[in-house]
Image (cartoon, rainbow, N blue to C red; front, side):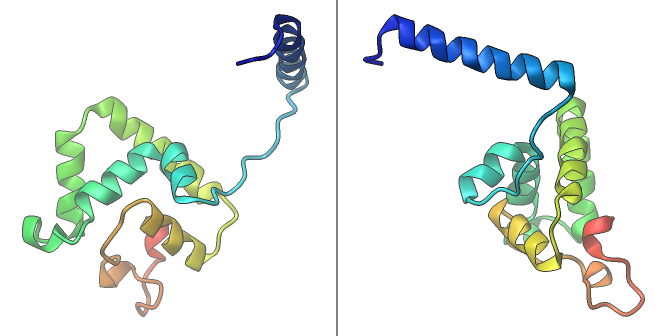
Length: 132
């Protein structure tokens, strides 16, 4: 890296002190909303896999509806990855985003089709699609 070994050791000690403080005090910065395509994919990799793989433009050719795509994902994906996806979705829904921000997040994560009409934010009497 071109740095003297003593500088690297000093930096590692400083980093260790910050981690120790965070663990012992429970102090950690709140996670920020991803700002770039790469940050969305790094933070929500399995969500990107689901949205990009099952909710692409080919959805209408491969599945009769959105529910069938989700069922196929659940049936063909390792249960540990499905569990990881569930955790990511909870984390995504906990972010301070409005409806437009969630639409942007879904697009950044690879979703190329809209939600089913019964789940769209404007459907009469429907629940918001992102909450399902």
